[in-house]
Length: 64
Image 1 (cartoon, rainbow, N blue to C red):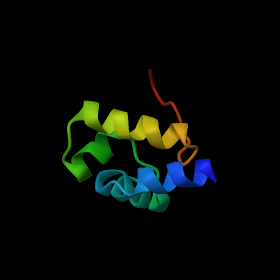
Image 2: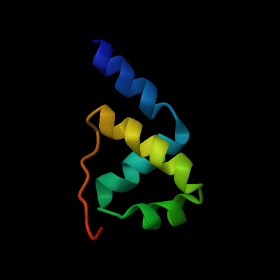
Image 3: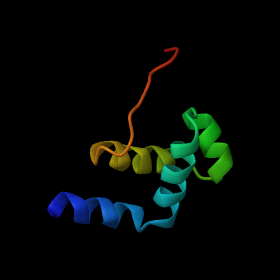
C-alpha cells in the first residue's frame, strides 16, 4: 500500500507525469527529454532519479 501511495504521489507532480507519459511512448536520452520539457538538466535529473527509485523507469547507458 505504501509503495502505491508513493507512486501516486510521484505522478501527481505535473512534470513527472509528463515525463513518465512521454517515456512510455519512446526511449529518449536526457538531452532530448530536456528539450521537450524545457527544464533545467539538474531538475530533470532529480525527477528521473525519483521515478527510477520507485521502479517506474529503467535506464540504459550509451556512450560515456
